Length: 183
Image (cartoon, rainbow, N blue to C red):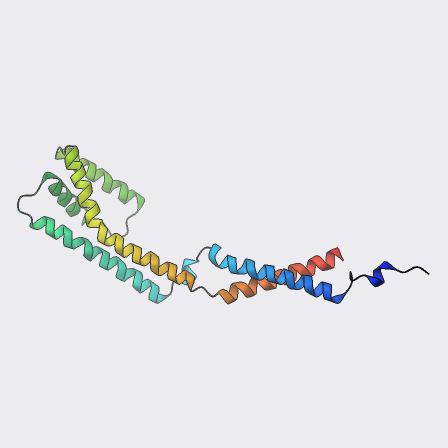
């Protein structure tokens, strides 16, 4: 009598099926954990009312931080031409709305270029104007960095268990389908 190889092999052992399903589940859980960091943040779902209040406070504070150096430039008695151009530009921008669009930004740049040409700023005056703008924006940039750090912290607090569970379930189902199809 000949032996049948299928009976002596572990090819159809329930342990091999469960072992491979466990491997698929573990791989799915690992991919789910990776998805936690890869998937983009859905802003509408993840920003709460508290976050919106925080964003508005950051914007108000950034606006207030810009007012301090601008007021300091206004209080200078002998001002340079670059400082005069900057103040004229700021006064012209005060009339615009808070929500700047691309069209508004292009218009702001055009008005700055127009003021530079009208006041005949030379290269050193243009450099001074750039320095003034960067100094005024430095404080608001610090606040923007704080907001970015806040959002990064928010991302780190995404619930890992949901992503791991979702990945494990998908991995298990994928492994089950693979075992059913391949036999």
